[in-house]
Amino acid sequence: MITIRQTRPEEISKLMPIFEQAKRIMRKSGNMKQWTGGYPNEELVRRDIENGHSYVCLDDAQEIIGTFSFIPGKDPTYTRIYEGAWIDDVQPYATIHRLASTEASHGVAAACLDWCYRQIPNLRADTHRDNSILQHILTKHGFTYCGIIYLMNGDERLAFQKCNMPKEQHTNV
Image (cartoon, rainbow, N blue to C red):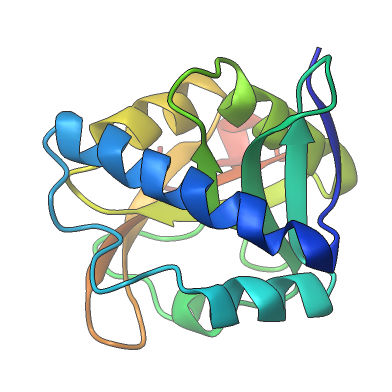
């Protein structure tokens, strides 16, 4: 069973290789453009930890097999959405960023998404158009594609949301 807890500052050296493994997973699946140019870098990960937004996923042996950022509150890159709409743009939400796991682990994304939804049942996430793996995982776990957002650097991302609003009330489904 996978357990989740906040990342400790001294664990940053264990997270960086996990991000590298996640990049290899992406490249093998044809996603060549996401997480390039040294992203995510150690400074960003350290800031996530300092802000209390970084979490680790632990296996039964208490080894770190995954990581993610869980950030409650408004995300500035989600202010405008194109070619769609958020399911719920009123209730407070949290955003999942930088989800990564080791190449040998299984179930990390599911554990992360379930844990996050238990914390705040209004979640948003985004991913690169070429990240078919994460798109599949998000959809499988009840997320709905909502449209396109643009990162601060101008890069396009596909935006998803999962909230406790009944499906019949979704405006964009």
